[in-house]
Length: 420
Image 1 (cartoon, rainbow, N blue to C red):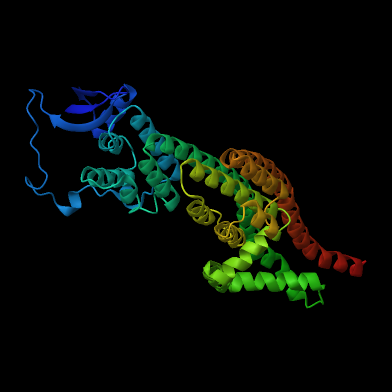
Image 2: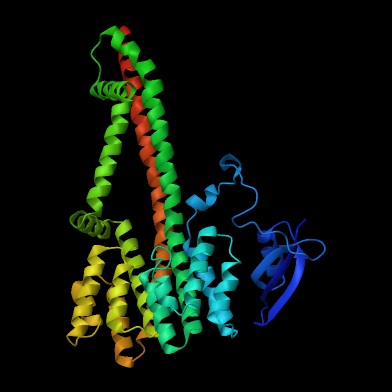
């Protein structure tokens, strides 16, 4: 087992060193992490205390086919949960008095995500060269969005970066929880739709043609539903490749159209008007708006800049337009609540709470209360949606099966009556 000499920071922020045997650098980090040590440097040493021969570019050449190709690192992505954990750990280290460069160095060696480690190593290098943290994070917008970098920039300017990062970590945790609730509620209905489609496809392609071929050989006039069933089974059985091709092209066209401004506006407006989906989409948007705006205002971001960034997290053109109108109205001297109320897109209770917060000078706290209230409402609407969708999908699948069975049995019953 190799022996490593390491240098790191303990929970009190003091530099500690030592040697320890481990199966590899990753195992070493995990072992020392349990002891409350964040590794900043490590190197492999021999049993006698001598350094192992380093071979960064020289030494024996390794054949391309013998190299270890990191396929995981090629497709690995940084999840929002990992960004939230990094943010909270960085806030904790900064609050303990550890310099920013050392804190980034410690966190770059702790994570298990190779892509995040590479990004943090690059950020640490640029910070050591004198760049601002917000500017270095801004170079990775897919991991650190504009909201993140703007809050970090405001924290650096105000000198309270640790407090801003702690608030930002709370915000990211709340957003991840909200996103998980919505996606978890839709997982079961989607699985049922996929399984139902597969079962119906097997029935139409394999089972139905064998049964209906008997009716076709008899040459007897069949009911319209049986004729329709036979036609559908023939198309799906004989031209299944065309069905899949048309379905794939239709989906590709829909994806392309829905991403264009006109198509996205139509679909977003439709989502808000759907009976079950509409209220859920609206409440999720309200919760995101309130939580994001409260977090940015509390971090010291100007209200116009905060509204511009908040608009981008709503993911709905209709609500984004309302926020844009609110920003323009504030620039002209109006309050936030007035354009929100005028749009009729935000709930009246939310608008009233925002107006009270503006009058009392407690807008950030009131927005936090709005976000908490509507996140609870999202929980209730998600549960209600799941409760309604599950039996509804079962009924639809049962009606399809009943139609197939009735279309097969009806000619048989007609033949029996004729014989009698």
